[in-house]
Every structure is written in structure tokens, then in C-alpha cells.
Amino acid sequence: LAAEALRKNNLSSIYAVPSDKLNGAGASYDYHKDGLSIRLNTSKLDLFEKDGRINGDQEKYTLIFQAGHELGHATRGETLRNADKAFNDSVAAISKGAPPHDFTQPIRDFLTVRRTEEATAHIDGFNAVAAAVKAEKPNATIEDVRNALSQNPNNALLGYRDDFFRDAR
Image (tube, one colour):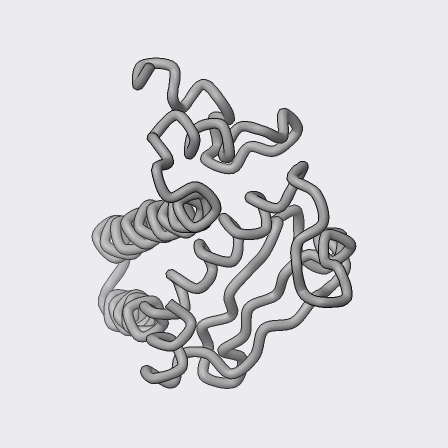
């Protein structure tokens, strides 16, 4: 995903920031042309050994999920910018008309793009974890992926923690 984001000129940097700069998120992607950066929470950096290996299992899949999720956004930066532009253009056009101004459709369209984007980014994060599990254990099963995603009980990787997989067992 990183190579694709770079090839599309949708990513210029990945850097760490304190958690209080992420407004409650574990990570974020700035898709505006003056940003094009992924910000990861500095609290995750103590997971790394000097040689780059991840130290311990408690939150390594959290970091992998967040990086995959944000890199997924980065591969689709143009989609996000287009949604912003379409929304702004629609609101401006409606605002020029006579009152009352009904912004329902531009809001609906914008939210549809954003919801789809977030869902797709979650799939990217899930796939990043699945790939990491598979790299560590070539014969990995969905149960191994489920365990990786739910190993940290304080982390809601998919918004539902272990409950996400309850019906899949």
C-alpha cells in the first residue's frame, strides 16, 4: 500500500506525534495536497527494538492495523479530495440560490463516500494484520487472525474488539 500511495503522489511522509495531537484517534492521514502525511501515535514507538523488530505482542497488531488502515486511505487520497471538492461546490451552488437552502443531498453524498472510505480502510487494516500473521505463521487460520486482532483487550481494532468475530466462530 505504501508503494501505491507514493506512486500516486498521495503520501509524502509518515511521522510520529503524541497521542494528544491525534484528537482521540490512534493514527490519521492528512489527504490535503499540502499535507499528504500519515501520523502515528508515539506511544506505539516503544514497541520497536533497535534493529527494527517489534518487541512483544501486546500491541504490535494495533500498530500494523493502524498503519494498514491509514496507508489504505493514502492510496485513495484523490477520492477523498474529490469528495471534499464536490461537497464544497454543491454547498456553494445551493447557497447562491433562493432560501430555503436544502443541503441534504450534498451531505448525504459526502457521508456516503466517507463511510465507504472508512470501511475500505478498515479492510486494508484487517488485511495488513492478516498478512503479518501469515508471514509469522504460513499455515495461519482465520482463528489466528482473530486472536491477533483481539489480543489486546483495551484496543478496539475493528470497533467491536472480540465481539466482531463472535458469529464467525
